[in-house]
Image 1 (tube, rainbow, N blue to C red):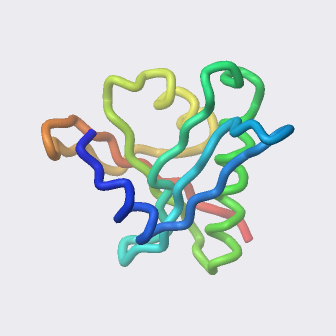
Image 2 (image 1 turned 90 degrees about the vertical axis):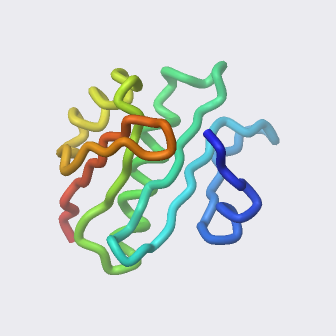
Length: 114
């Protein structure tokens, strides 16, 4: 993707999962006009499958609640079938499909309980 990460970090909140000084994963969150966005989520390859991604998603959802939002939004590339399956299992529902910046994106949201 063609992302200006310096600007993305300046415009968002970045949280990092760390263990013994090793970075296990990260999540980028932001409050936007459209709602609270989970902008990016990544887990180090050696830590995939250990629940780090799920913990970061739980953290993101809690942050949305803390900031007064009743839902959380995200998008992913339609080719990321494993991510889509995970998001659906966690209660995210598809709300739109768009072709943007050369990518086919699926937008999803999840209603949050207080």
